Amino acid sequence: MKISARNVLKGTVKSVTEGVNDEVVIKAPGGQEIVSVITKNSADSLGLTLGKEAYAVVKASNVMVMVD
Image 1 (spheres, one colour):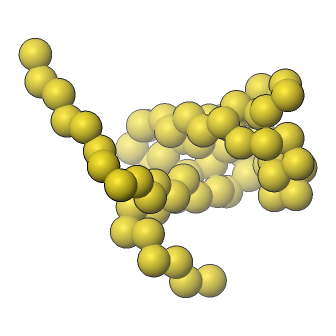
Image 2 (image 1 turned 30 degrees about the horizontal axis):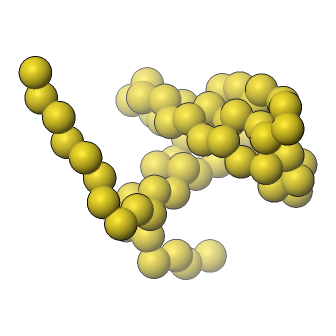
């Protein structure tokens, strides 16, 4: 599969918290965690389960950067 987004982070599903929408945590190899809230139907369709390989794809019109 090819995608136009440039920010694609490969990792494994650390957790899926079910609700009206599901919260999915993907852990990257370096230990960083990406959290996404997706529809329950999407989570079910993707078969997201603990330990499954998944990709966090970030496509945004802007990204804020902050320092102390």
